[in-house]
Amino acid sequence: MACLGFALLVQIGTNFANDYYDFKKGADTADRVGPRRAVASGLIKPQTMRVAMFAVFAVAFGVGLTLLSYGGWPLLVVGMASIVCGVAYTGGPYPLAYHGLGDLFVLVFFGFVAVGATAYVQCGMLTEASLIAGAGVGALATNILVVNNYRDVETDARAGKRTLVVKWGRGYARAQFAVAHLAAIYCPLHLLTIHAINPRPAVGLSLVAAILMFLQLMRLKQATTPAKCIALLGATGSWLAVYGLMLSAAIFVR
Image 1 (tube, rainbow, N blue to C red):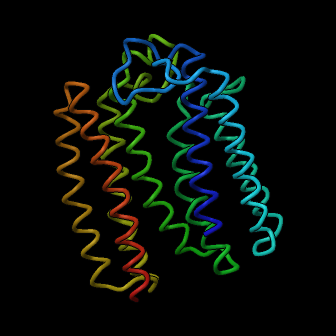
Image 2: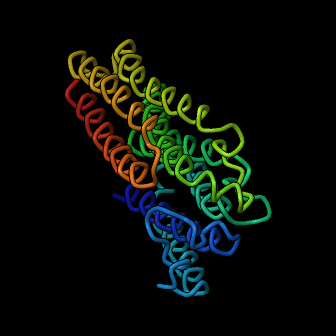
Image 3: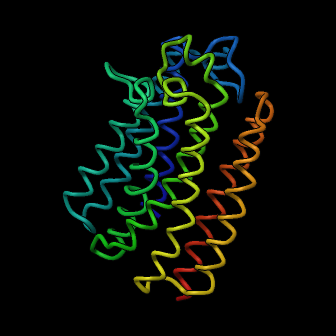
């Protein structure tokens, strides 16, 4: 529960940071499409959002401290890095998302760190299985960012937000989207080879992932309007949640 609480609080704090810093840097303007941002739309004052961001990160830090008795000082390093990068994602002197590093951040912290650190707390060790599982989850998490940046490529370019889609175009984004799906397909099969998962659900999950790869890739290719991108954004997030639950169930029943 402490791991879950820390992860959720860091996610919320990072979203608050994105809302605040994207507004300050001019990435959120009247031209932006997609879910409404609180500061840019005038619902919350910038200073209020900034205070809320640091307050949430402070609570996350406090929750994370309760885990030190289970995992020692490595968890302190992981927790501090998670919070610092949550702010640095769009804030600070070198915002990661503005220099094409957002995808790497998501893969590392929403995949390897989130899954690996949680498994480390429960098991007392970092295993190959936890890293492979983290790779599958993290890959699908990056696809949420890909769809979001795919939609915002024009406004991001004008604001100087050099995402990978801005740098290399929508064709590259579709290729990255497909590769992430392939990683999610491969993950259960690799876990099967090291006897960390039940065979039938592992194969079943990979088959479902293959079908979803085809369907979502077609939707991304056809996402010629912001509304279609927003709909795909929801579907991509939902698939990540389902994938995580199915993968957990397959591991549990082995």
